[in-house]
Structure formats: C-alpha cells, structure tokens
Image (tube, rainbow, N blue to C red; front, side, top):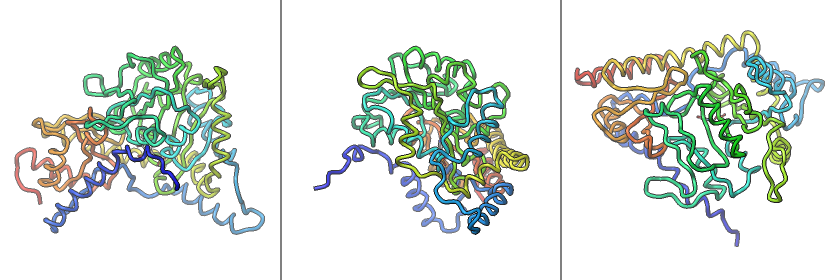
Length: 416
Ligand code: PLP
C-alpha cells in the first residue's frame, strides 16, 4: 500500500482563489450583462519586450542548425546569463555577488518551495502575516507545522503581523527563529523596507545563526531612492541570506518562466553533528540532481533583458503598471478610501471602508462596481480589513474600474 504524504491533508489552500472564483461565477450567472473587471490576480497583461522576443526567435533559429543546436545546458544556468545578472543586478549596486553564486531557474515560486530540500525539519520558521501563501504551504507540505487552527494559522509557525501601525514591516521576533521569510517589495501589501529595517534583520540573523529567505520578485518596481533593491546591499547579508528574483513581473515572463536564486558561497548552516556546511554546495547538489536547467531559448530571452534596448523596454513595462497603480491609489483616495503600497510595488493594499470585513468589501465591489479584488484575510488573519488590488491590467480596465468605484463610493449611484 503506497502511503501518501499526510502533511498535505493539513493544507487550507484551495480556499481563497476558488472561493473568489465561485462568488464571481455566481454573480456572473445572475447578471450576465455585467462587464466584470478582474483586479485580483497577480499576473501581467502586457506583451513580452521586443528585445526578449527577438533574442528568443534567434535562439530558435540556432536550435534548427546542427552547428548551433544545444541539448542539455548547465543545471545552474548558462554562464553568459549568470554574468549579466551578477553585473547588472548586483555588482552595479555594489553587492558582492559573483556569477557562480547565481542559480537560474524556471521560477521563484519553485525555488521558494524547493529551498526547503536543503534545510532541516526542526527549524523554527517565521513568516509575516499577511504573506505570500507559498512560504506557508510549502512548509506545511514538508511537515514543518502542526495543523491549522480556525484562524488558518499553523501550529509551529511564528507569525509576525504586518499592519499599518508598523508600516507593514514586521518587528523582530521576541523568540529565536531559525528561518525568516521576508518579501520586499511586499506581496500583498506593496510595502518596502528601509535600509535600517533590513540591517536590523541581518543583525538579528547573524546574532542567532538564522537564515533569511529574501524574496525580491518585485525589485524592479522600487522607484523611491534609498530603498535597497537587494538584501546584499546590507553588510553581513552574505553570511545569512538567500535571495530569490524573477523575470516574471520585471519582463512579463510569467508564462515564459525564468528566475534565479542567489546563494552566496559564504553562507553556512549547521549539520546534526554540529559541523558547519556551506549551503551553496547543498543547493548546487540539489539543483543538479532534481533540475535540468531552463531552456536555452528562454535564457537567451532573459539575457536580452540586460541589453540596452531590453532595459529601456522593461522600464517602460514597469512604468506602465506603476502608472496603473497611481491611478488606483489616487482615485480611491479621492473618494476617501485609505490605501497603502502601489508606489514601489504593483499592488495597492486597500483599507476596507466603513469597518467592512475583507469579504464584505469584496462582495460590495463585485456587486456594485463589478470589480474583483483579493480579500486581504486570504493572505493571513492580520490581512483582515484589507483588500488587494493588482495594477497588472490594461489601462482601459483600470480607468473603467476606478470610474465605477468613484461613482459608487462618492454616492453618485449606479454603475454603467
Ligand atoms: N514571489 C512572490 C512574492 C510572488 O508574488 C510571486 C508571483 O506572484 C512569485 C514569487 C512567483 O514568481 P515566479 O513567476 O518566478 O514563479
């Protein structure tokens, strides 16, 4: 009899997005004439930059010639892509990161989950609340938690609330934790961390021998000067942090799939016998055993992000979404709704008006404005009383959604 991994049975997932879909479907069936605008999903809408497309077409042509055909590539990613990443994303910001410390992958989501392969099962794990659900669920699957309580919180995890009061940046835990997930710019709140905040975390991690898992999937959206783009801008981070990056939201690669993880060679963890082991070697071993690399064609597309044309096009994409975010922020503020984020991130974190719960506000937006958001409570219990709006949409949809919200919440009446 094949036994299953019983830890999967503890998972609470399958609740948030299916429940949103169920409510939207029920409304659409009852109101077939409604033009519903979906602002809940964190997926990009605009096409791939031309520089990336051109590079990929050229790579496809190369694959059609015996002389330039490529089979399996290096599991860690091609050297030319890793060099471009190291130079542009790290060395240009004075981060001491070498190309050999970069591991190209098919997504940050996978890397965030897979990293648990090289960590032990007895670590105390801290996450923020609200949080990108992948950090939680992958730990549940790996058996690092007990069951969830009625608030959806798993026994054994340390939850660090992020709220308006602490500017959506968690306070250091009062107890010792071994692994800490940080995500800046933050999904779902759109918050960023100052240099001082990150320095506090690095100091904490080094004092306690903890590991920071730093998710910078939205780094390209940082617009304000002085905000760190990488954890490695913080002195000491090479000794305590792994960083996850992605081309998904930077260059529209959500369907193309390319990302990378940085594991400094100076990063160490402790084995059961008390000896210190470098994590780079473990991750290298893990990747070369369980992963066979990203397609040559896609890596050429990712490399083109760093060309002069690619950089300009990617900046254009990011600015397009940030302009959407500005329209959302300003329109909501105009009708007296409190908003956070959306300045250095493609997400606007909306305080529900009139004391509505997250789901009540979700229903109100759906029924009166025909607009779909994501209830904040779905990202964790401290997200109750908030709703996430995504700026990943066409300009026409964003403007129409804001026109409707403006008319309803300013008391002007029905939606057109
Ligand atoms: N990290 C965060 C915080 C995200 O919001 C997402 C996607 O929404 C990812 C990682 C996943 O990125 P990828 O498309 O590279 O798997």
